[in-house]
Length: 444
Image 1 (cartoon, rainbow, N blue to C red):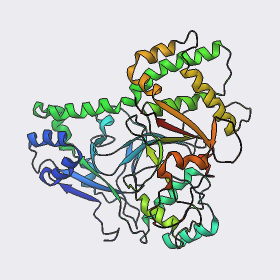
Image 2 (tube, rainbow, N blue to C red):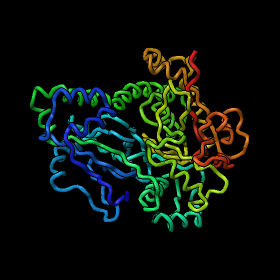
Image 3 (cartoon, rainbow, N blue to C red):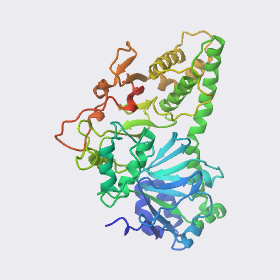
Image 4 (cartoon, rainbow, N blue to C red):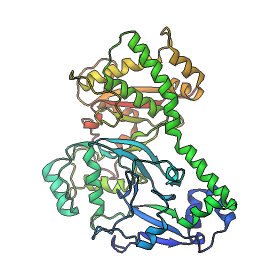
């Protein structure tokens, strides 16, 4: 079936949408079953191709028809979903990513899979300024993919209009354009079932629908996790930074903000990165890897086409996650110092700063008391190991390891969709030139 003929928007009754929602959320299905909504309460199943914009700066977007680049939604459908800046949506297949994109800088707020995850903040009256795309936005290929002749093959075969990517930020744009081509074999969609205005009117006025309304409020509480964790961590951080100032410890503000960002990752507040391992929930990533390793595609001769995707850190999962100092995807509270510092210097400063943060022997360290009283945060920090890597082969002492050794700690970095092909890990990748590996220590 061609991409042009694929039905991207479909109106359904509850009985037709029920099985999809059941696979996404049994609790939500039970609540709706009790209401037994009929045909007067339409739902809209919307298929978003990989990279399609679902929301841009709080503005809801419908998918577009691939060849004509216009929305496939009729005015009637738009009116049914115009009860707020974002309609309530249940993700039933694959994932989305919430993020800010400012000045060629991606800040990943969250990724979301199955469940009622779209439009919750807006339903509760919060104005969400972030953008949402189908699949992952924070996707980066480790090996260099900016060679002109190799990229020219992609432009010719897959109608890629982007120039060879100059930075990691540009990789996703090229990936998206490849998947739009008729030559691309995989049909990947993020499927979302949206509630129409009839549903929302009942939820807000009819007491019989209060259970569904309360379910949305419960999801809103979960969505506020970032803000709630940030408040607690900001208190911890204020004590720590004041202690640095009192002791006249001068640290680059960028390094301080980087450590703060890593603490957010450790506590599961925001996602980090991890290598793909054959899974495609973030997009048709396996097919993209095949294209880059195919001599008739991009034609990587030597390296594995490793793609880094968003992933949350968890103490329950042995696989590590990564943060790259080469990706400026942090909110910086202060401007950078005029003094030019190398990535190596930043990594060393980061390691030293983390040691100070966790050192319980410091006198007058009230943030440690706060951590001790917070069982969740305390246990996380006590059971996390940070390792630092750099791509260049120089001696950096005991703190910084060569990135060539990373596959020894994470076998996913050796993954390739092609079998029996001898390729090497792209240890000289820009992403790895100053990379922090965050791993859960084995529990006692």
